Length: 137
Image (tube, rainbow, N blue to C red; front, side, top):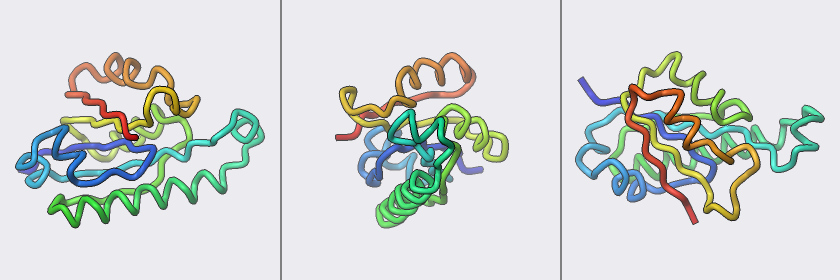
């Protein structure tokens, strides 16, 4: 049975990034689900419930990541998730019971306001799963 890895991304990542985090052979032998939260860039857009641009961008991020992973020999599928990253992760885990969670966020100074504190929250909420974090520049 293939190991299941859930990858939460705010920007497209390459297969090399995932292989660095989990190991090359492990990534190539795993079943990977990529989820890109529909991050609103501003609190105003979030509270105004204007998600259209964010959803489209998240779908593009997920699709580009899946294509890059496939090119690197990683079996991946993916799509957009809820705007709140923790909720996007919970939704994905409801149907994809991943043993490992990989969080790929922007560099600290460029974090989206919804990503702040995410790594700590995920580790606290899912202590029975391996959680890795990688900042993307």
